[in-house]
Image: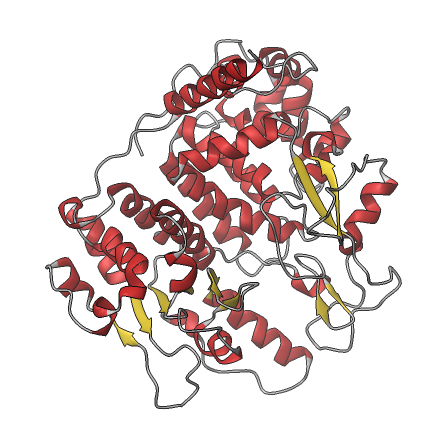
Length: 498
């Protein structure tokens, strides 16, 4: 009987998500022309070849679109999954093209509106070396193969120039961001051992990283000459709370687009949240009194968030028993919805749930427009990416000619659409309504969100939102609650197109 109830609950969740999913328009030849011009695919058949004369093969996008698949890349069966990716991005649906993937890719590429290099690494013959990391931007997986990763060119150029300035050495003059938005490295080994949906969804995730120009505040997360953005091991798991909130933001917006493309991934993550699933927190071995080191690109003192586990214990968060045997002995385990609200958003999936649900109800293009505007604000500014994006999303929903201060000064009718508060309502929901005060709610946004938004939501509409979709011991999260929240704010119709 219990298993039947669980199956019914899962089926209802799936139905609720499907009803909310926007219907995408088909990708047009004009969309594929943008992808042809903006994506530069490079086949790296020798990723460990460090010779100055070695050059990857640049794929002929126009030829591929016309039906020509010739050359070493197309003859290499170990590259089969990445061949499918290239077709999915460049071809029409009759020849393996994926309309949804193309629509999302075009939308993401318009954030910076410059070409992107995509290195396709043949790492199936053996482990990669530091040469592959240096020359092609590869990231090392636990098995020493190429794990998917990407970077924005402005971000990396600025990092090198700032390091040179602090170290009083000549600044690099070659600026890659003049021509390129970013670069991506994908390995055939991981792609070959995954399904098609994972490969395509991962591409969209990494493509967002090529556009994201927000500062990762990495200079605040060096301890004894070692970066701690993702903790001491340099890895981040989907169900981990990581020290650097700037990194959480970066991963959160990338996950948002992969969620919108891959609805099953969003369903699975919502179920993890609804079931109060496990969240991992790495225990930093470095002493809290340790300094950053002697490099020129670090702050005078590391952020206290390096020691996130200690902060959670001091805040009274209840640690639960780790599995035995424990595959990750240097990690503590908590339950995501039991964390204090400001710590819940140290997990990237929570931000992705907030933003993807906003996009589903108000339109993907609306979210992308806000993301583009936020990115412009964040470019070469070290601040909270989350606070800026939330502010941008809220302002995008204001009635024409209105300011949040004017809304706070007058009585707003129940029927009036309060689109401008939907991002905050979902932030409240996905932190399990655990904020007990306005001050505590503000900590979700690193205390950097304009206070007028906090006042407007908390004083006027917080109670209606929480009544509409209560979270209690007898009322756990359900996708339908996201719709009733929108209705409580006067939003009666979801977006139906991309």
